Length: 157
Image 1 (cartoon, rainbow, N blue to C red):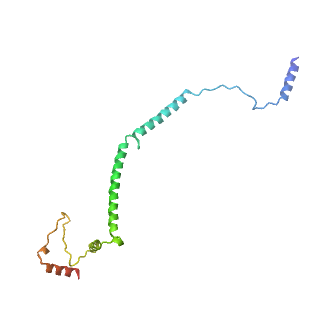
Image 2: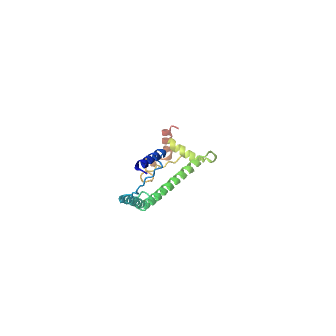
Image 3: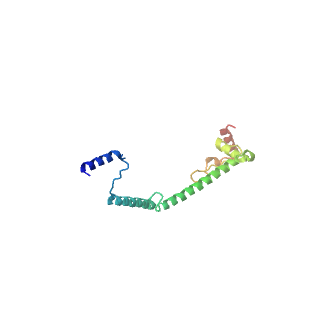
């Protein structure tokens, strides 16, 4: 075959074959990732591990701050117990004013204290607030009938 005939045959064959661009496979060469990328990932992981270790020792909830947390817990438990005792005291005082079991003496004492009044038959002892002892007065030397007259005159009875 002559070169012209071979050339014509190749041209006819090229026109007959429909070539799809997806069916063409090109040889590729695998590319290795750079070595510094492995080192950067390793360094980042070690840095994160160091952060976690530091937080486990010195962080807000770490081993070092555990003693502070335990001290805070005991302090708060003591405060809670003191407040609970105060609540129980208030509940007891409130139960004394219950209508079914009202004590007239307590009611009378509380009313006189709030109204700042006294009965003519009451014995009043003045107490010094600083030392808690009865205070002396010039009225102690007076006889009982003069004291009652003074009390009735000042109370308006």
